[in-house]
Image 1 (cartoon, rainbow, N blue to C red):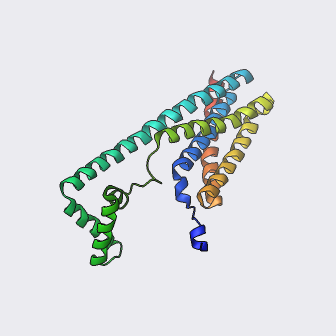
Image 2 (tube, rainbow, N blue to C red):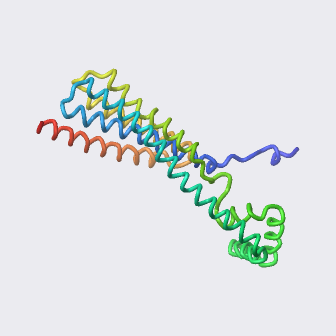
Image 3 (cartoon, helix red, strand yellow):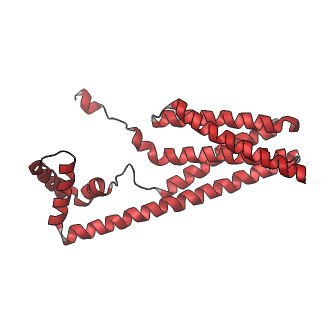
Length: 233
């Protein structure tokens, strides 16, 4: 057996489905919960009130993320299925036109006309719908929508992200709660950005700076609002 046959490439694009939901869920969990905690704490609320608000934010956010991701990705899946059903009908009604359409796609990608016709013919003979799904619609096993996986991943990672600032509330004295939670949240966001970038093969510094900046902005805004309302009340 040759080395080429033994080696099976692992492409990063295969991680898109779960990685997007995981990063989004964890990032939202940290930012939302930490911002909620900081905003409530800045309004001079008691330590127990801050903790209750954080727990409520974790539970509500996890359910919201699960439902939102499931509904959103389900809509994508419905669209994919509708396109596939239409393509299946077109293949049944006019296979010759679909063959020409597929061959034209390969010509645009650089094949000469004769070779494009041969490729289209052989691919359609094996799996006509699969060939059109990949090359005409852009639907493949790697990128196809998976609503349940997306929903569960988002919920679990949101809860994991939200648990980090909540832990800071438990271990931090009330007098320094706002700065401790803020600094810890930014550190967690920076770590999350680095992990997500490494898993997806992206630039670590850019990803880390991006999530940290938006997290800092959210924390600053909610702290300001909490301080204003706390002073007014």
